[in-house]
Amino acid sequence: MATVVLHAVVSVDGFIAGQDDNPGPLFEWYFNGDQPLTGEAGERQHAQFRVSTASAGYTRAFWDSIGATIMGRRLFDLTNGWDANPPAGEHLVVVSHRPKPEGWHPEADVPFFSDVTEAVQESKRRAGDRVVAICAGEVGGQALQLGLVDEVAMDVVPVVMGEGKKYFGGITGQHLLDDPSVVIQGDRVLHLRYPVRR
Image (spheres, helix red, strand yellow):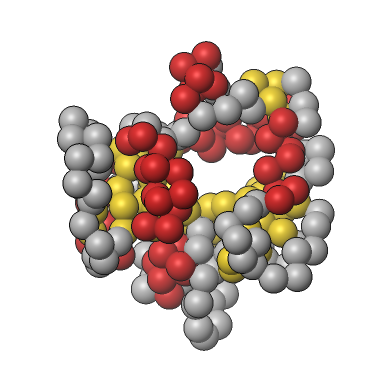
């Protein structure tokens, strides 16, 4: 059975990007070391990630564990759905109330769902016993609120952004997490992973 992990890089005050969707300094740790995160094909497709040794050990293992990734429509539009080739994992699932753009990678098996629960169910089927990574933001917050998330993973960058797109979107109510199962200090980032309390 797949483990569902809500994940993103986040500021100390809980933002994953500015109001203009610019991550600002949040992604700088991806490029401040000498350890590559992906092979040459991944670097050609996405970026030449170079992180510290401490971050590489954790991030590589986490990325390698991912079988499917769920993204919302806003991130899909901003990244063109990573051209149907996510940075980690084999499968991509999109949550959107709008249909897949006409002509967008017709060869790609990337389903769109308007319902978060259905998207998680399909992602778990595709991931098998691997991880389903849900990108933080509105969709991730909805999944946590619905009780669909097993763990919350945060790469906390030491910056206070003041405003922007919230890690948990518009989530309401209180949701308890257990003490972190992972605490790793990288260079300009702190990797944390919290099991969701049931």
